[in-house]
Length: 367
Length: 139
Image (cartoon, rainbow over all chains, first blue to last red; front, side, top):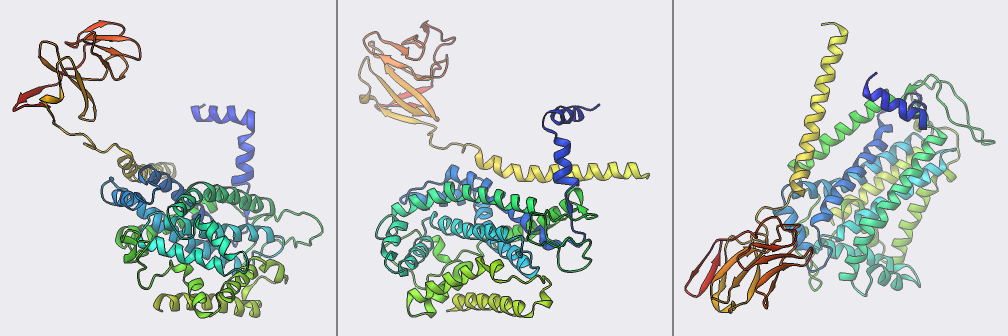
């Protein structure tokens, strides 16, 4: 008997690892028509781990002090061996995380996987998307460049449009009347401690729901054996005769991660400044607003909406309504049909919504 | 090639590839974490002679560690590493007794760097220095 077998035996007697491996691995059956899009979640988990590791590494050399932050980032980029690589993986990775989270959401949207009984899974995913955006926003300020400073000024300022509490809320977010050293302190704490911890908790909850309810069957191809959900009692959505997660779908996940890495690393190595406008290389100056300051691509639609509506409150309210509709989608769309081509109204609305969002983004970029 | 052999060969290839990938990822991280060579330490330190009166000691940073210059009552100058040879604390100069005391475990060194008492196993490390033009240059 090999050493490994003996260790596994020892653990098996105590905590039943073989049963766990069967339950979560080879015995965890997925629908036979499961597709590539189902591995977006695994890619996201991988990106999050990469962000945590590179983030911890950056903490070693980064100084969260408004006097020294920009210089410490310059040291990381120029002096620390491979500092540029670690930072670029972190900065480009954040953009990729938003992009993949959106792809993950769109695939759930078009395959109708958010429908009953998976409403709470959709809600936890919606919260995760918002946490990712909050992580991006708070991380953006940390290099203390002109771009970070003024993007944060604009982003925190938009909260001021909320009636009555707006101005107080803005001051609370910034820790002062204007963006300044207190803002860096609180954004740093949020970015490295509170928000990542919340993401970990919520990812756990998201996975718990996935495991508890079972994976949804894609509405395309061979449907397999159906056990329609009736809503009278809890019923695990089993896939008898499906394909096992380990090793079959795990290999698909690893393939997807490898494809992702190829795309991601080509940006990191061949166009690392893709997401960096030139203001990102100038230290923050609270007395000089650069011309044409714009947020990151994923906030451009929000930015453009605020420009379109002359009343700032209307702009904020429109965004609030859009996000609320997205969060409550499973409660509004209660039909049983999940095939996108058999839901023409839904398809028209969602494609229209995505095109509108992309249009606002492009408009915001060129305006 | 039989099926078993092919599986084994592919397994070895996969393992080698994974090891190479892990090494490629670990190398930048290791370099990122390594202490920066030559950071914050001068190769030579120059101290004006007038800063070192008779019987006094002057502590300074040399090559990333602590060092000390003393001028004995007879006017002779000596330079040592100020790191105690026992467990690495920094020794103190006791002007009245003209000897070094390590406060951590009461190790005692003479003004010549020799162990007088306590646990230190070796004398203090001597540093090379030159005296020229009213300056003492260590290193």
